[in-house]
Length: 114
Length: 385
Image 1 (cartoon, chains in turn yellow, purple):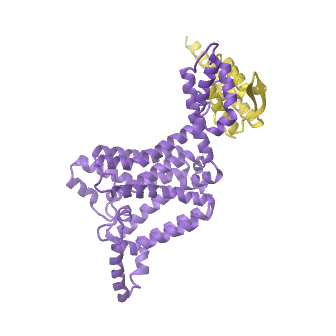
Image 2: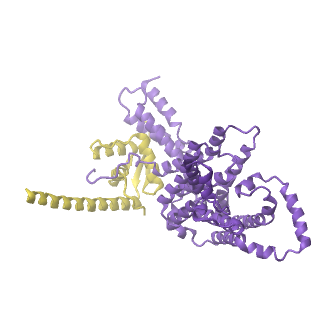
Image 3: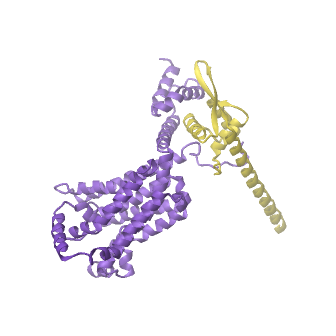
């Protein structure tokens, strides 16, 4: 499995699909909501991203629906995508834990100096 | 036409920039998302939205092109050539060094560094004949193209599997040479020896980018019989050229056949030979002898390589890739024969064009690998979800 750190938009895209299948517009709004508006995936970027994660086997098409005469294709996380996201979460968690521990030591040292 | 109809039409026009096979599957889907995300009363796509669609269309196009070339056979061939090409470059430099050094003397380390094989004292003479700065830039240029050191460094980096460093170095050599040549007014056209070397470095940079398998270094060869045989054949050629050949040739040649050989040499000398002449740095009048001795050997090596490399789809592709620098060099050489010759600046632009195209392809490959949601370039941060 590719163990390179995921870029934030990819991470958010996979996270958006972690709970269940979603269609393109659903992913777009979910990513904006999760990142509190910091990451806004436009349609072009979103589909280039989906093309890539589908090619890497992390995401696959789930089903298609026609709503108001328009096609909606739902995407879901594959088992490989789930593993990749889990590994990334663990990597981030470990990094965050190390950083928090170091910061705590730093604060303690600064308090000692004061 | 309604506002929504006008907007939809504009989006469809933008979506035409996507590859048709991609559009067949995704056009209606993307259009649905675009229309869902549109502001109420929006009449036309926003500037950012348009740029995003066009940029993504370009990325998808590049990626689909790469996927076409991503088939296993091409990937295997790229990996094979990525590791083999620098090794062959080193071996060919060694051939030249041993061949010409054995005949005319090996010279000083500085002579060797600038690739003045068989021309002892060239480095020192260049400073006597030219102003210091001219001699220095000329020698640096020669060291980059004719000298063995860059090829050796590249081969070591590639064999160690230091793909990124090797890519940067392979791109640096031709760019540095071009910088020196163009600022000092050197003529690049009709210099196939240098041009082929420059194209080989450019191609190597492109291959290293396109073939992640080259990160395995020498292990990527997987001891493939074809790769080993190719290398062994060239190594054999090196040994023969470097001194063994006369053992087979001179002592066994009776006087009668020596006369016949001189006649044959004269006949051969009348054949058109400009490109090969310049490619191998053959001096005036040396063509007949070269063709009879080293040329025969080169022909045997080339024939052996061709036979070995056409033995499988991967090797056929590898042979095609290995031929690219030579084909480009030959094409540029043919351009140099145009009469009247083009002005120096046009000639240089023409010689630099293949390199520019190779680098554009390298940028496209790089974009294709990076394309996707990662473009904004931010690594995932804790607590963002």
